[in-house]
Length: 140
Ligand SMILES: Cc1cc2nc3c(=O)[nH]c(=O)nc-3n(C[C@H](O)[C@H](O)[C@H](O)COP(=O)(O)OP(=O)(O)OC[C@H]3O[C@@H](n4cnc5c(N)ncnc54)[C@H](O)[C@@H]3O)c2cc1C
Image 1 (cartoon, rainbow, N blue to C red):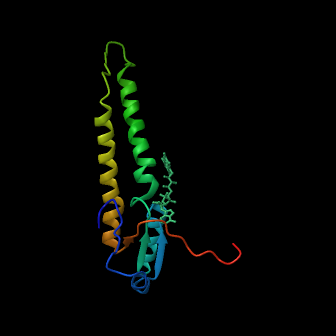
Image 2: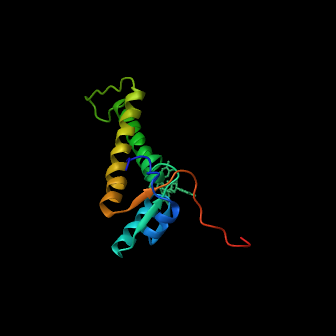
Image 3: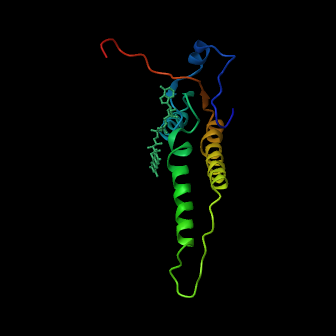
């Protein structure tokens, strides 16, 4: 499985996938992984259906990248003004492309280690492209 994109399960039909699983989870973020790991502990066969990037908001565009950039901004801010007499610091220019590449590398590593590799180890398949939804009940 690609660490970033879910597999498209091109060789398996929907009904083949459905007959192989006990639980289908829409999404592959933190909540989906909690549910999937709990289900695997109960020995259920699980599939995750993801329309975007494996790992969801936190690792890809939320907690992880935002905290990486905030920490970098704090580091740069501190470099411009030393709190201690006799200690001179100097910030210098920011290489924004390198900063973003570093942030992207962190995201990629954590997405692989904390999501894709765990799914593989736990026997959780991640499939799908495009939006999936549970059927609406009549009248909803
Ligand atoms: C900038 C930012 C910073 C944040 N910082 C923090 C923080 O420091 N600490 C913290 O606790 N929280 C933080 N959060 C919040 C945190 O990211 C979310 O609470 C958390 O990711 C929600 O997890 P989730 O699994 O519920 O949903 P998500 O991680 O959003 O996962 C949902 C997944 O489902 C997929 N999906 C949705 N609908 C469908 C569909 N119909 N078919 C197929 N796939 C679908 C989406 O593509 C997505 O991958 C932050 C959020 C943002 C935006």
